[in-house]
Image (cartoon, rainbow, N blue to C red):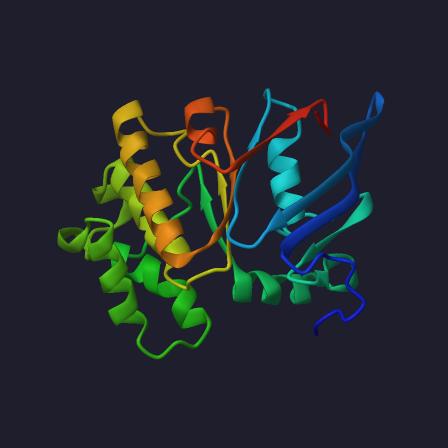
Length: 230
């Protein structure tokens, strides 16, 4: 499965070359991203910032293999996503990647504990419940294990989402506006937790945000304007 012909530098976990995304519209072709070159090192924390419509979330989707580029390539851990089919990309994500989204994306019919256990169960991990309990305790939700998402506040739901993202100890965590639906105080608590877990697990963090104080906590900031890095 490993692509032995990788051009990726040894310390890089993600590299993008000449990455572009264009979509047809009734007015003609819309270029969302153009010729993006990017290398992200193992263990690095990187913020992607820019105005609405600058291509931040599109870049995140391409780097994570959730979307396919119109041009260029992305390598994750030396594997060229262009050489993998959809199943191959899903396997790679399952092996290496965690996600935290603005909208939490918890399954409404499952308890907090079941939501966090889910990625481990899908990977066939034996002690999924023990690991999920430990991480929910770590994020301060030991008393909320049997609550479903609608019984939890927004901040609690995002902490469940963080626990779910980190429970499989991903090499890379993608976070798309993780505090976008939270008030300032709750958002600040969630961010503290995000960076604590990130340091504990030495995860590579790629964060899309419009919050410059949040971006400033990352080691590096990449600014997009009209689909290009400036």
